[in-house]
Image (cartoon, rainbow, N blue to C red; front, side, top):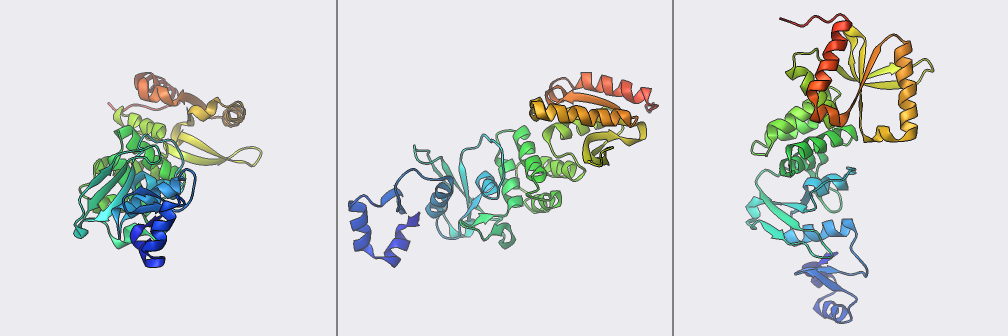
Length: 297
């Protein structure tokens, strides 16, 4: 991918016209040339967005997070580009085509030097990308998933998310983003774990420790999703990956080790925590009482 201005500087107008006439080069967008054949890769699509927006523009939002290694399926197909507002360019939305998703150019006044990652193409740092992506997400749930995934995949530290969100005072969902990062800092790194901690808080239950490390009888380090240490109750939150046969077998072995050690264990599907929290609260409250917990009057 290369801009027309760059081609003119390197090889001149005659070479440009010749290659285009021979169909070895082609215009992807006004002022942007593709000098190869075949479909565009995702990275080439990102380059198109940056070149369309012009000098000092950087890849942002979900695209920048994916360029940094973020995994997962997300609804937003738009390539977001950030351009300093001082350059005077208008906001632009290029409609999708068979070769390209939609490209959105955001004119921003809060693009600091420390927010830019000198990669190719230039992009915002991962923490800035995730904060922006969460603000532009389709829903609060997707915003929480984005921040959680970035922390869980060790792409960012929760403190970095809080630091960026703190200075972007006009960001959509700013309070939710900072709350999600705070939960991640305390060990709740998936949306279902965050829902579980919130559920305990809202219903006056003790606050569990999340992702507690224990060593089983074989000397293998294990992580407990949620652990009420004072009452010896371990809660396992089962997501979709627990349906895999090998994962299921490993879960059973870990569960048996917990039981042998004397702790109680409760297991809840992630969807139940979200859709029927009252059922989860009732069972959890009963287990805590059986273990000696006395609710506050």
